[in-house]
Image (cartoon, rainbow, N blue to C red; front, top):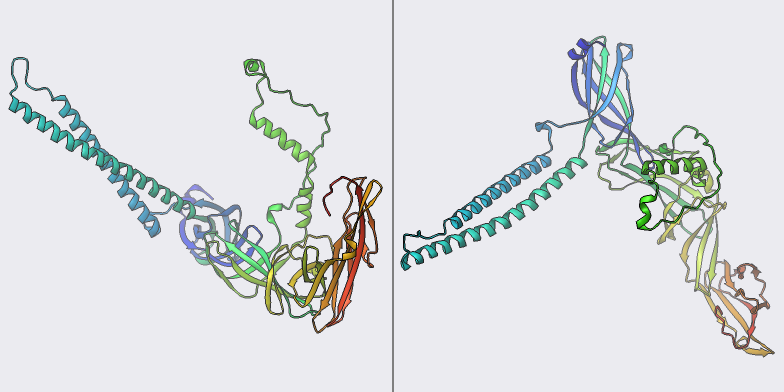
Length: 524
């Protein structure tokens, strides 16, 4: 394109209309349509309503005008508004700021005049001359004048100084508000240069990536009754502060992470070296003999090179977590204004198979908690996030769905169930303390009582524990554990049993602790 043709081209200003948005976890891709009338020859289309948080490198423009329309250039620029385009709020701020500055200038001028007047009065305080006597009446008259005038000047100076201080604060505040408004309401435009073989209306498809947008998962877990599948509602909390309202757009949610990059990382040399400790800092009086320290840029560069060479497990893990991405196309149009307020978007509903049992640790809390062990969740590519739990129509609690666990099941607590009554008591005949030579022995025995007041049988997992010795002089001996599974390393005892409706079951376990006489031990 020649210089003369560029100078002759016409410019058409239009606004982009957001039609579809793909929301990633920390950004969004906006798809816009633009219709503009162009003349034969060179044209420039200035597209407004563009997010100020745009990634200028992501701009893509395509024309539907066929072979008669040729794209020449696309660029983004900050939009410097004309006076007639400024928002009313910004105009009002600028007007107030200008008035405050004028007021401050007037006060400074008034202060300067008063100070000069004070200097003039003080410079002429001499009375008469060497050859002229001053009468008492004249002296009194002049004293009254100086007293009255200086008092008035001092009073006005005091008032003006206070008003100047207040005016400076007002100017500072209005300046800050104006700057903040400009920063939060930055705008830009995309300039598209094209050639057309004839006058026509062209339609442009414009896509770009904008920051200040994203989504995070949240869930509802509902159990209508024990034995039925868990109903999982997958939701997204979508937020956007792109500066552009999304009105009636087609929404797509993606679990991809564009910031991870699509290029294979290159291995850097991995250097092995002998560790050389740094010399201790010398005394201040000898510091002049030390070599100059390397510049900060050099230090940072070395550290960066070593970190690139060594890598980290976290980097590899992040890449693995993002190798599989899922997109959810939302059928209903959504309107999400810019401003950061979360908008809940339903993604999917799933019925997940689950096994139910009660779990209790009466040593810590004499309550039975209903647990759902959910299977089959891995095929849905869920993300970790908060979940609201509902059981039999009632809200139970908020939990966290951790899908990064290595197990095949997700265990979710459905809350306490008062219909399973649990009690833990120490058996009286095992409260004795015996002396065996140089040793002192103490016997422990506990009874756990489980009562099912429900109308259906309940499978219950009971957990308790025995102490573990950390000293050779302390010996813990197992007694009758009542059929519990015992973990040697943790001392944990576990029973799993089914209690029929309306019935009671008891469990007992015993152990002995021996330790030297005269020693006081803890942890019993």
